[in-house]
Image (cartoon, rainbow, N blue to C red; front, side):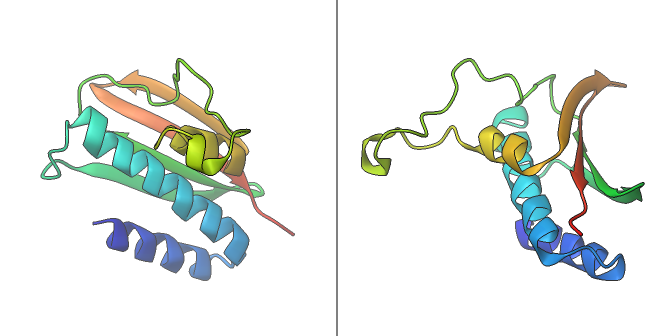
Amino acid sequence: MLAKVSSDIECFCQAKSVPQRDEYALNLSAEELFTNSVMYGYKGDSNNSVQIDLSIENDCVKMVISDSAPMFNPLEQVEKPDIQSNVDDRAVGGLGVFFVRSNMTDVSYVYEDSRNVITMYRKISK
């Protein structure tokens, strides 16, 4: 399923002339949040749907990822990830939301109409 998500983002970016570095950031963010939806929202059940919508607004790509899993806000992290220690000394995981926040211009979460909705913007590179 992630291959389809990546392919769809690639097609969108090519059709809209979005630079490759922005496409990479969008793909990374979509992969992280899609995985969070399946693993935490749906408790690993990949038979449920995750919707991803892309559009251009002003000078940004807008990406909305939503699911109907129980309310779950992956943007709320209790602890900030350790990015200072040696890679071999760090715990596995915990960097996904950090990568999303680092690669996107703006990220927000709402729970509406029984859906988790994450809206992200990426300013298009010149």
